[in-house]
Image (cartoon, rainbow, N blue to C red):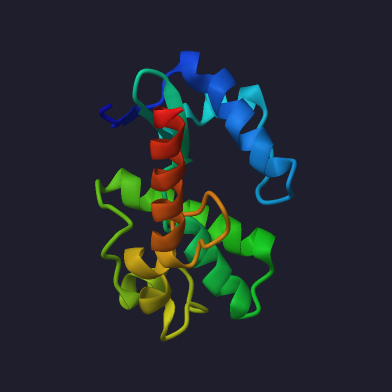
Length: 153
């Protein structure tokens, strides 16, 4: 059986909720409403063989930037607003967030510290999400093993 990965579609939402709710019931992740999943469908990928076997949300660096500012003493709500503004500004000039420099971060807000860029590298970002269903390499390997087992069943 071959496993394929594709963007999530509206007809995947019920299966996605069932899987997510399984982890949410164990307090391993937050539940997601049908409406939330539909509104954020573009952030998700689905793994399937003959049937749905798993899903994941694509990692973004924005939470890492907001977390960095919060560690600098910026209230999280304000940090979230700063990063949201930064993302909108980058989109307006057709620039990705990945590869942003410390100077560019500090132009958005001088409270970005010396370690801001290092703390938001994609490898570090992915590795920091080590809860079940997360993007840390050991969690991805576990999810692949679980998907393979499901395909054999």
